[in-house]
Structure formats: C-alpha cells, structure tokens
Image (cartoon, rainbow, N blue to C red; front, top):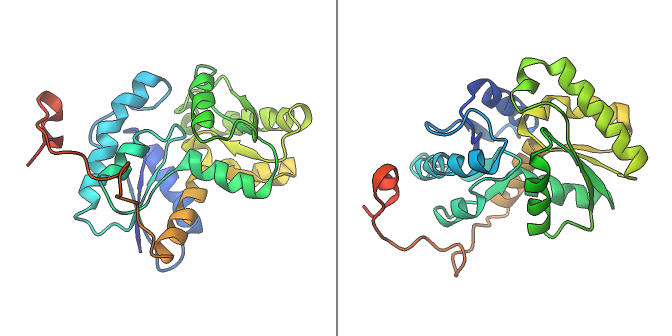
Length: 244
C-alpha cells in the first residue's frame, strides 16, 4: 500500500525526521511518501499558522488522488485540515493527534500531552475537547521551545520533554505521555524507557492505524458529512480549488 505522510509546514528538515519515524514502523510492503506543501508556514505554532497551512495540506491530498495513494497521515499535532481533507478523498485520512489519543486510550486510563510553546495549550485543549477526550487527557504540558528548536537543538529538546514527562507522571498521575509535535518523534523510545510509561508519537500511531484501515478495506464515508464539496468557483489565491 502507499501512504502519503504530509508535514503541513514547509521545513524539509522536519519532514525528513517525520519520514524516518514513519519508515521505522511501516511494513515491508508499505510505501511511505513524505512531503511538505509548496505553500504554508515554516512552522505551526498559532491559529494563524494552522489556518494558513490548510490549503497546502489539501493540495497534497488532491495530488495524491492521481498518485495512487491509499491513505494519508497529517503530521502536525493540531491535525490541520483533517475534516476538509476527508471531503476531497475516499481514502482514509489520519490526524496524528487523533491517532495518538485513540492509541493511548487503549493503553492507559489517563495521559498527558507534552508539547511546544505555552500559546499552544488553548489550541490543544480545544482539539482534545473536539475528540471527546477531556476525561482522558489530564494535562497539557508545554515547554519553552518552538517547533523548529527541536530540530536545531535536539539535546535540549529531549531534556525539556524529559522534565515535563517526569512531572506529568508524578504530578498529573499520567499513565502515558503523548508527544504533542511531529518534530518530537525521534525522542519517543528513549523517553519511554526512562519514564516507565508508554510514550506515544503520533506519526507512528498514524501510520499503523492507516495500514490497519487499508487492510480492512475501509474508506471514508461519503454519505453526508464527508461527501465531496459542492462545485463552485473560488477566486484569487484559492482559484485552483474551485470547479474545473
């Protein structure tokens, strides 16, 4: 099968790290296509960034329809464009935040998210609520590091995650830790050994869920909510998304 993993930001170094995480768990017969959009922010750390990343995500999903893609993984912890992406393809579309929460809920009763800058906390609280996971996610912990800091200084990055992970286990009574940024994928295994609880990277979870759904022959329901968008013109920068 062919899985397209979309990093919604335009930083290729981060995309390569995401690709490595996906490749580390894929089956031998699964092809991973890791991409960044041609348009969008260098990193996603605000509502502004998130919303402006969505056209690029949708463009990559639409392109995937002619590339023989069997499933898509949106590799940003805000799951930007997830619902819209499901409207423009029959293939399964997996958001890494949603995937990590579903996987964690099968392994632990309570879990905390460790993520980047403090301004992200409200965004993730709203995302957790939208997935009905408020009773499972006991805390969203932030670090003083932005997304790209984890690429530039991985040693400091894992130390920040280690500190917050220890606090989550001790103070939140968290029984698992979710890494709240796709750029943290490389740290999951080491942190799990050190913290003694499951540490879940959403990229890995997303790829494995995608493989399972494709194996089962399931596709996105087109009955109502996720049916294809109505044809209409779009103008300006969004012209390419309108009726053909």
